[in-house]
Length: 259
Image 1 (cartoon, rainbow, N blue to C red):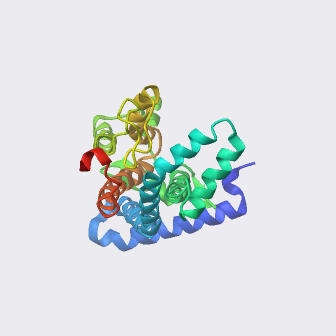
Image 2: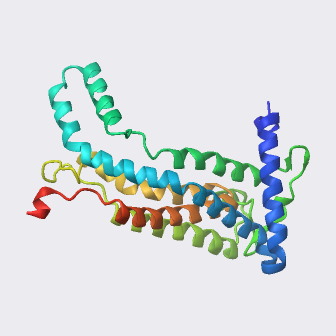
Image 3: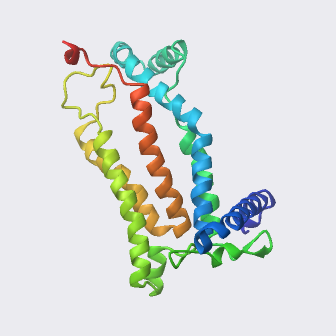
């Protein structure tokens, strides 16, 4: 069974298709052939703007978890031999403080289907039974439905296409590097955990986490260029937003830093 032909999914894709085509039509007199790409950027900005309240909630949750870190550590030490009691006490602490260990997951959960819809719209020849005209749209001369890996596999990659794909992937990678430096995980070898350093990371896991931000750049090489543009805009938004919100909701300062 074709998943994209399932009526509810087909209806969602058709609605998204109409939205992108409508925005592209409105933008075409202003920017010409890149209007579809601009429509994707605009949709990305609209989605991220709509998620600002959840991003604020995420920052508040991060701040609250940092503040609760010493209490959580005490609970873990006290009930380490009783996993069920440990779980109950931890959840009770989160409930008493009005937060949750899952606070802030909503932005990621919401964006996953958005990326999935954009991906589908640029790989399907038909959408809900009608031709998919989005496949005729380009960005800097590169079809929005093509991918770097796809062109390599089919032997259609040109220098011009490589420059476009490379630019998108390099921008994502550069943002990932800035994110890695600004929000570097705390190694376990650091001093005893404090409220500002609640999530000390074991050395073995630290190395893996250092490269996690680059995963988006790898994904961008496999998905259609349209989805790559979405990813590029959203990671840039995420970085700026996290930096601003970290200033608004700073993590507690370690006691030794204030001494």
